[in-house]
Image 1 (tube, rainbow, N blue to C red):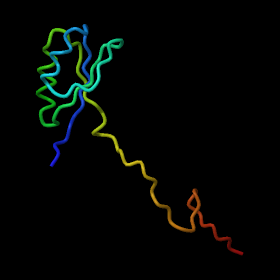
Image 2 (cartoon, rainbow, N blue to C red; image 1 turned 120 degrees about the horizontal axis):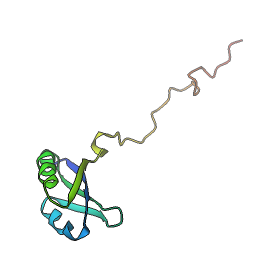
Image 3 (cartoon, rainbow, N blue to C red; image 1 turned 120 degrees about the vertical axis):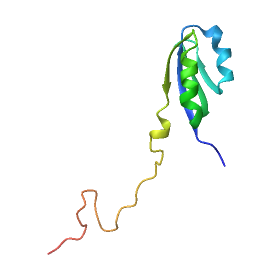
Image 4 (tube, helix red, strand yellow; image 1 turned 45 degrees about the vertical axis):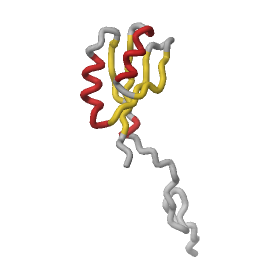
Length: 94
């Protein structure tokens, strides 16, 4: 259905050449002050694209986004009933 995407962080020297990056994927964000751009491409093409982007004269570095490796499940896990945070039972034995 959907192909997995990979984000690339591209560090550059000059802002005026950014338009060339649009041919490599979806240019999501450009920071003119910090001189980097976020570009999304298909995950299976990411390695090949990063090598070709590194060869551009105005690019200083290309990094992969860490998002695909992160766990994005933010729901709490269900605790067993009758236990506290320390794992002891709530029931008092006399």
